Image (cartoon, rainbow, N blue to C red; front, side):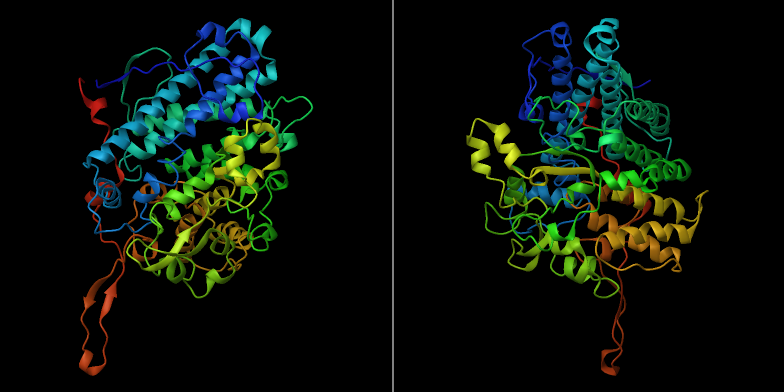
Length: 548
């Protein structure tokens, strides 16, 4: 049996008092023992906050698994071709799914190591939270359930994304090589289990338990996200629920997990807990068009009111500056090919983009590194009221955070719109046990209306729905790391309409120009199943395969 060796340092420390920004910016260290760490309620919260802080780091959702590596693999961006520096070789290797590139292998190792290190820290919290003394003296029952539910959900989320990244294409090989599932706090050898086993017996198990615990404890169910600082008590342990894996985010994560395994029935059941509950829309309302289209200096480009889970980054604007806005070169580094955003992504079926709030608020005219006109993504661009320099230099960050707009520092990872897309896919895919095409269209149409565009009715066909659904994933989740996983889950090729990196165009008939008969072209990605396997199934880091 193959085994997996995990040896990571335990990085936890106790913060006896934590303000709002301590909670958001907590950085763990190893100065105090585990016993001291979990001897107080504040110690538990500090440890939990440390887990979230690690999740928002560059090796995980703060970069590689959101707007950077994973979206580059998803063919969002064209990359400058003439520059032969190591960095551009790295970017081109990602666009070509070349996992042998030295820089790429380094990034994959960083993702893997940080994910499992964070999982181990999560397990430390889960171990200590079961201590009898903790239940009786340190944590009230409600907070015990809430923190345990969050940590189970975090553990499941990290394992799910390692499975989605390094595991097989489930539609083709559900019992293929999966990943280890770590539930221990001790360095040990763990088996690499089949993907289906990891998903059904471990990930979904943890999510199911997390959902039940959070249902019984999470204040988000009665008070919403509570995204404001408590000046009176200065205790934010039950606030800012969008920055925690709260109940609603865990439900959506469970739907995502079921759908990854092709279980349309259970995925739909979970998604409908969100789409069909009017209270969810009350707590997470559609972003107001006035905050997007009528507010050019401070727009809520992240659609933050609809986000169920994400992370805080007080310097979010730097992501835009250096990756999308040309902070180093004066030209955008990550930008789709000329004509893609305005000519295909938001224009297919004629003029669709004119009223789409995402096109108007998240994209702006730009120039590629090669000097060609295109549209650059401005989702992370700093809003005028953020006062970045003051936040960085002023010691009283609590006051500055209160002055800032929450949506100007928030980065989305789980959004309510995904529940509607999951429902539409489950109901609108041939072979689904819950197939109901007209109802599928009602869920998709809701999102069209919520984005300021057309309601297409319920009488259109399945292929039309599937095409729209794919385009919606590309439009909705740019910068959030979902496109590559969507295409892997469905074992799809990156056809011309779905490819921001390059034009996909093959002549099928030269025509007869002298008689005015034009040539014909095929715009489909003709990748074979073997080629898709090479694209979508990332190799485990070499360090994890040695000494087996």
